[in-house]
Image (cartoon, rainbow, N blue to C red; front, side, top):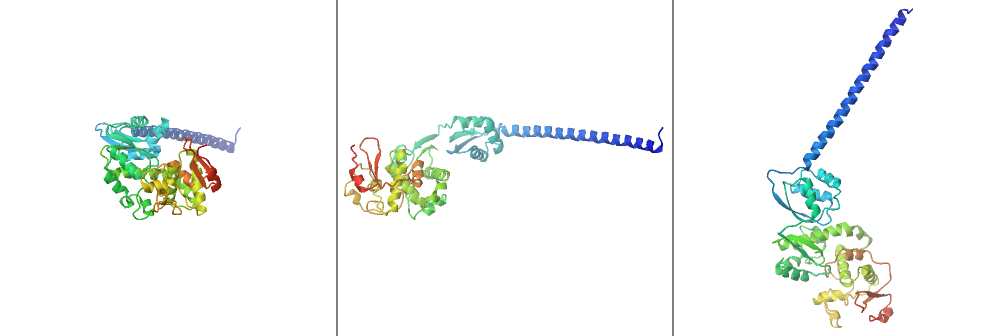
Length: 363
């Protein structure tokens, strides 16, 4: 038998139970709403992603010529494509490249793409490599001088020799576009700063644009592979490239570049003449295998047989390996080297002049 208090408590219990059920129902509704929002968001993101993969203008496609530089990351490529109006979204392009595992397959080159291509189609084309009937290739070997470049490109019908030499004879023509050239002496040529490589250009490309392309490639290689090491040595940009150009001209084997670099570094420390035959050949304008006594006495600031220190400017265009060697000399105390007479291009290295004299190039 319940008293009034018991009845009151019983009714209160029903109320508490009802309240708990109500809260549980509300929580279920909230959870359901949460899951619905997630599903909706996923569908929305999926639709956004799918739309981002579609062609920019499928109904009215327009051909666009683009160039993908060597060493371009997927991020850089995405930026180029977006700026040229070939893709809708850079981030979606990068996700698509990753999903297709194509990051390492996108090739540098010149392409003719169009706004009617989907992102997947563009990735496919970039993975194949560029082809264009209006495009030609030319190669500048490592160690070439500007005069040799002019001769080669003129023979291939790519440049006007006189115009090419004129534009490369003074940095002033390009220093506004490439401020690093302001570090060079007034009137200094672009010798050493036209990077040796294989290039693709459109037929009819101007001498100015070809030279700019070669300077841009130098900048890219320098900033990516060289600049971080320049603080270890007290050398200016011009001195680094000058030393690298001498190494490029003296070295025939990759494994000797750092050894040859060490010889020149050691000589600079000892205030010795560098006595590089390559610098004399540069003055002579020909690459004589054997220099005469008269040759090594020729009057020129570039003649390291009569002037101490580095020449005032590079003597050729060094490649990446020589640029790296200029900043990373081997830890040896060699002061001399001479060519072996065995046809390999190898050198004999010596610590003293006596050792150098005894080294027989015919052995």
